[in-house]
Image (cartoon, rainbow, N blue to C red; front, side, top):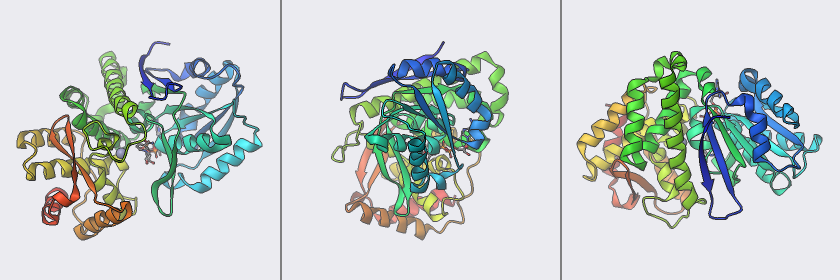
Length: 386
Ligand SMILES: NC(=O)c1ccc[n+]([C@@H]2O[C@H](COP(=O)([O-])OP(=O)(O)OC[C@H]3O[C@@H](n4cnc5c(N)ncnc54)[C@H](O)[C@@H]3O)[C@@H](O)[C@H]2O)c1
Ligand SMILES: [Zn+2]
């Protein structure tokens, strides 16, 4: 199997795993899974949804079976609202009925919703079952499948119930991006721009250049171009390597850390993103699209506070524009957005921390108490109602 590789080594030595990145890897997923798992593993519970399984499920299942795994398949409903305790319960019941043992394994085939739910099910079933990820959205490839955060949404909030459960391996086959809807691509690229902005000039430029050369609106036709295949493999590998680097040295997101390598910096653009998703009842924006606005807001705020250069802000704006139009946000009541910030503050029980930028590749964690509410409100207006 020809592929790029990123190794994730967590401080607890017992855990090291590889992320394989390449083209047309699904047909070898059986052999790959065999290498990631213990020899005793007999059975695999493959978790997906009907849409993704319809496209890629048989290829993966056949490959796993030819590597001598017995495969049982659970298809969850498609959509964020099914990343729930109810679905979790169904999956656990499925494991139990199919006599999944601690030595068996769970494989997630899908986007972040399937990955988070299947990962959490694997984390809690018999106090921890081996888990493999085959992410099929761009967002899941560069973000959610790396780092071991798993969980579900509850009535108390999104992602509030979960566990850290590192996979035994991640398989990224870029060929599956051919069928990804355009908005999902844009959403994934917004997270890529986010990671570029907080990592270093090199990753940011690589991401920006890639988007200039291969704008997402014509994505499908590029897959016949060897140059594109090589560039996207390199970009995804670099993005994954950055996320892995952050996670390795702050696996559990130490609350006390305030430095520029804290896992918290991955939340760049996310305070506004979460508020926008919430005030539109999670219906208008894809998560990544909301992050697009969040990035612009955090960068604009950084500029207003005289931390961040105007030229850099323009650069960031340009790159995001290459992703195409984000859903309109101009009708959103700004007061409800700032109320959401206040609500989040109360929930954390202390001040909000904004992830701002001093430069591309230089994130800074700034306490909300250091920023006047008036500046926040004016910046919100500028970004959401230009
Ligand atoms: N664990 C983490 O660290 C982490 C990080 C970021 C996001 N997340 C979570 O990830 C979730 C969002 O993930 P997502 O953006 O992948 O959304 P998603 O899983 O809902 O997938 C988006 C849509 O694309 C479809 N799809 C997936 N792969 C496809 C393919 N190859 N071709 C055609 N259609 C395909 C899915 O069926 C779905 O309809 C959220 O729940 C978020 O909380 C988790
Ligand atoms: Zn995100």
